[in-house]
Length: 179
Image 1 (cartoon, rainbow, N blue to C red):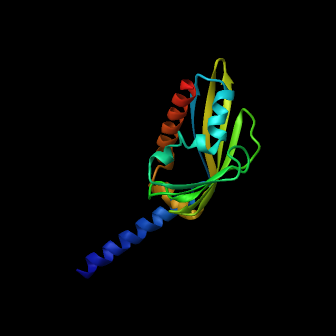
Image 2: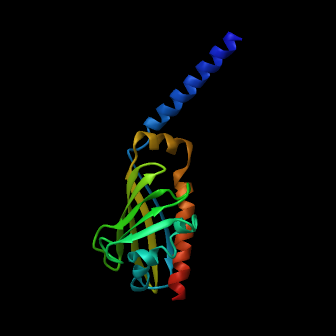
Image 3: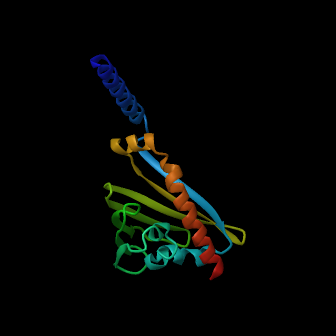
C-alpha cells in the first residue's frame, strides 16, 4: 500500500513539474484577434466602438450577464470615456476605458480586470476600408505572467476568447449594416 502511495505521489510531482516546465516555455506576451468584413464605411462603424454606451449594445460580455452592474465615467466617447463593470463569474469585475485619441480607423482601450484575476491588457480596434466595406479587427494583447502561462497551457485561450470576439463582431456587423 505504501509503495502505491509513493508511486502516485511521484507521478503527481512529475506531472506538476512537466506542466510548470511547459508553462515556462510560453511567451511573455499574448495577442488574440479576430476580424470581420462589414458592409459599411468606417464613419458608420467607428461611433459604435468609440462611444462606451453604444459599444455595450454589441459587446458580447454584456450579454453574458444581463444583471451586471455598470457605471459610466468621463465623456461618452473618445479618450477618457470609461465604464466599470461588476458581473458574474463569466464576466468578472473591472474597467474598460478609451485611452488614445482615435480617428476613423482606430480605437484603443485598456481593460483592467480586478476579478476573477487581476490583469491589465490593451484592446485595439482597427477599421480598414476595403471597397464599399470595412474590415474590422478586434485585438487584445498584454503581458503573460507565469500563472497565466500555466492557464494557457491548460486552456486554449485563443479559442475561448475567439468565440466571444466572433460573436461581438457579428453583432457589430448586424448593427452597422442595419443603421
